[in-house]
Image (cartoon, rainbow, N blue to C red; front, side, top):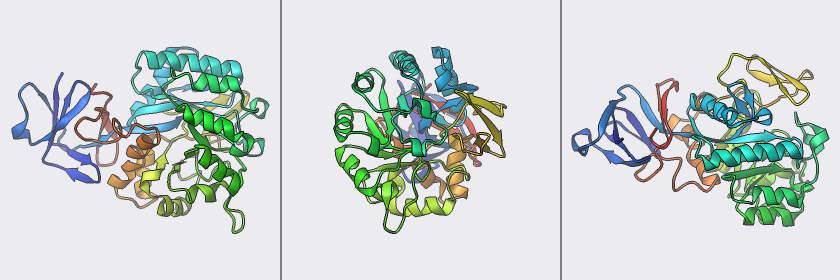
Length: 376
């Protein structure tokens, strides 16, 4: 069905258009035009009082709708996670598997493989956060499953049937030739849960690493004579940095400093969301670890932060209120930046003719009222 979305404020790039109609045809944005110039055959839908934004892209989603990806057993579980986040404007995501056994990794990969084959709405691929990490910065990851990377993992993620694949690993624990092999085969590699030195991180970047998972968290702070992983990331223009902007993981002033260096185009809002999203639950388990939600924070019994209770609409809203950004700039970090990181800049992350019709309608307070994935 051809649709014409009329009377909304439409975000195109860095500017708002309030006199244009957005045309959707066959899953794509057919163009923008004045309502009086709308071609025949389009069904008009009135969004007066609302804003239309590109759909949000989240590269780190551990769970939602009461389901953790680690605990998923069927396609319905994957769909539940995607649907929970869609309510908050996420139209494309990488479900994220937290460090687990090889058998669990294979099982979850099989589910994602099937979801990709069926073109499940909202699922771009998979993010393996671990298990190839540094135990010294494990956070909530189960140290019993942290291990060295091997060829069977390379074969699993480079087969080409999992959609977009992101791997978070500790550069100091990973041979550079494996980083080269992964990136040469189209896998996106990110540094996280790591104690990598400046030189180790630089070497990984030269080998093809392009991302940092939740910048500042689960890594040593940057020091005057030991810039470390953070210093290398901030000094590398092509590296993208994910940030958890929930007001708990990182102080806003610290995030502003990174923004000043990296710019909006290489900073990505992520949720690192757990299964609580879209539910009333306040307790969950990850393996044998009990996690509790209180005052907006998810923590273990010893107070360790364990993912977040953040959704993408809230992350964008926080970028306005905590980072003092205008909405049109905050949205960049949830749309075109992650799209570019994943190599999807020609199809996702912007409202423009020819782009995939992944769109979100929001109220002025960033409450999501409707979303479209490929025009549906």
